[in-house]
Image (cartoon, rainbow, N blue to C red; front, side):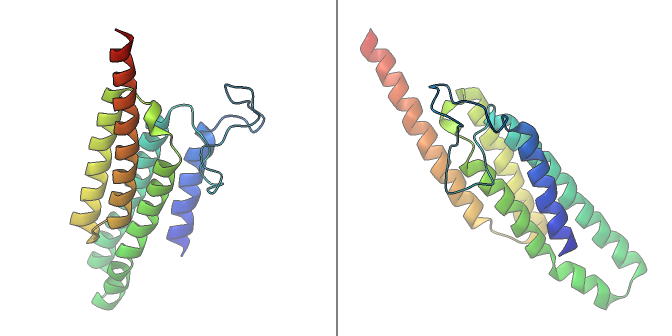
Length: 168
């Protein structure tokens, strides 16, 4: 549980470092801005690609550290102790994937430039592949969140391109 608490705390530190001040007004002057009121943990961000990138870096370091700890334990501890750590791998991955999923859900991706969105998709594909290969997880919930975000982005992108065409 200490590892999961540390993972959650690290994710919250990244999110809080990127959020606007609590009294920041939304662009329309409608009070503090929030993307998703049902998720108090994920505020609206001024640069969604940056927050997800920063969060991914932090989560990667945590996952790598867990993997390194497992490697070390297997060289100095018995098989029983190593198995306990190995059994915790899916739980550690799920916690990391949940943090990424919450950040993705609250990031407001439809406002990104296409090149930033494609870079973000590539980064998240690598992140989920790490889960599959090294932690034995299919990352189904994260993949579903990514699919929902991609559909919303592409719908908005298509609508804005159609509006541009109508103008001509």
